[in-house]
Image 1 (cartoon, rainbow, N blue to C red):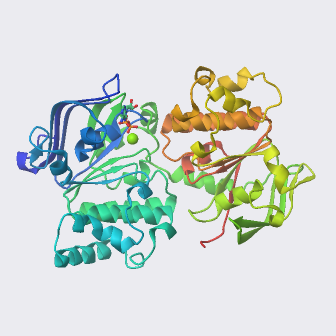
Image 2: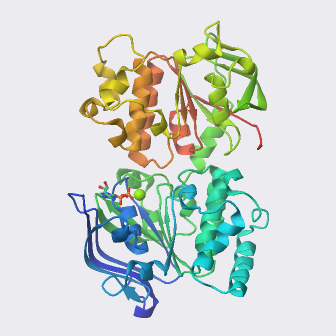
Length: 476
Ligand SMILES: Nc1ncnc2c1ncn2[C@@H]1O[C@H](COP(=O)(O)OP(=O)(O)O)[C@@H](O)[C@H]1O
Ligand SMILES: [Mg+2]
């Protein structure tokens, strides 16, 4: 379909490409035909597990070097093909950016991190300085250069990861869910950087669930389903499909504006919040350091309340302070007319962390569900609602992130907690996973729980919240 390009312009070309991982039963990635010309941007979309990352790993060489597997067919990248090039040679033409930037940093200081790939390639001092000056200007990095990576926000870290990839000077760049952990400001910045890279003539391949920020950048969309590239469509053809059609394909929205408007409205919803959670002059701490005061928050049970605010606005610190992890210096927490002291709060409240794996303590799902429960009998209605019946014998660490999250929410429900706090549960969720989470939160609400949902995902917030509270604290 992209045959209008002359051969020399083609940067990435796959034919009858098939990947089976060493330990996988099914084909993980199957691409009959794919072409991408120099300077174009291809978006890989489709549900989780559909083969997007696998294709990126074939392109950047992580497969088969780090993830061994059997490859059939042909893949040409730049002037090299699999048959003739080693992984190192292929990888020299491709720079990669992943979902979680911290996994790819080697240094503490931003400047050191940026020049590292160039030093690695043996570039001269002069050439490195030149490239650094260019990238610093294009990406507006002056303020960041001397900073310690650990002190940056998630969004800033991802900016550094993208800039570091750009420093490699490759024509081709691949991105695997680069915004999965970012708030709206972070997403906007990534969007700017991608546009700048496109302007420089880079060939970009981006796997994403969040499609809305990419509409200005995309030239083509490749739709993956169950390990197969089903269709490569030019952007206008893809956008011509209705939102409903894309929803049927399991894709998230391309237009966030209605959801953002709804979230704004939800911030002004008035509900009669008596006899629930009551905080007055509540002091929020971050590992012992005072951050800010929340003047008043009064919330009734039986609702889902979104807690919003930019990355670094203190939402997680609020959650930790609320559940008692910062002690009683926060000031009192009232629940249904009674004061809950810090030590007692975790008996009433469940806190499901963003990295839920840190909270799993047993070696079996069933045992995990029995923690903190008086009776031995499992409530099958809850197990069914959270689709855990088939998983009872599994080791919690063998579950996918979504399954682990379901397990933790179900466990908090079974142990009779009345307030359930979820910290950014939607990073990296595809459409179906987001809809399932929304259904589960509705279930908690119907059981009379107060659900506090910390999130920067407007699509999820708009679908599920009864109201939204803005945590306004600005930066440390
Ligand atoms: N390293 C691996 N070893 C074995 N199977 C894998 C590996 N990585 C991914 N898979 C499997 O390959 C299929 C495609 O996964 P992936 O490419 O990660 O999808 P996506 O990026 O679209 O979520 C899935 O069935 C997944 O379980
Ligand atoms: Mg993936």
